[in-house]
Image 1 (cartoon, one colour):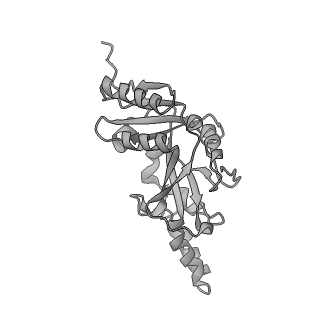
Image 2: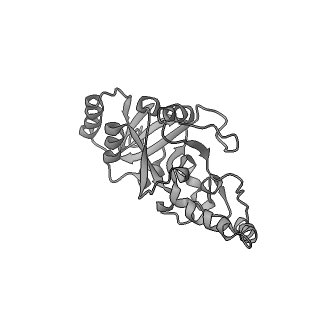
Image 3: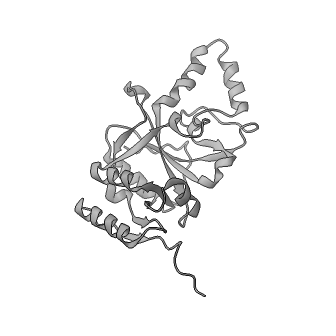
Length: 233
């Protein structure tokens, strides 16, 4: 269930376009089980995920002098927070195609912030929050910690190109032991507004995705990316 947290920032326009770039196997898994995979935060490539900037860490250390459990909580909390990452952009991103899809067999889901919010309402097991990521200098800038999700909504400036918005879930109160992540129920038709096929893919691949979607009972708008369209000269 999506929870609107006024302390977590979102784009002002709910129709802001967001993207998820993925390979075919992950897309099939999404459609087949109608569940969205959320990755454990400490399993991301960026080792700083869920950690604090230097100014914030120094403050936390002072608060932990007489209460070591305060610091221990933040060390272990990363294992209990799961994340689904999306990219904010009005248009397709060449860089995202390169980073998140293998060779020419990938696709991109186009959605909006509002669609994400509505799609999450179908899950009644976990509470989900959505927030925009802030990009800061970890040596100089401060990360607030009055909200448990704030450490997961800040990243180093080196990652600004990601323009990320995140779905976050904290399973601490559930007492679950998560390996790589967990899946949550999702309304697929709300989630997906349009699907774009990899710009370097061949027609058979587009037809495969269309046929696969229809066989599973979906009728999405599916288009080939035009990033590799013929030049006009």
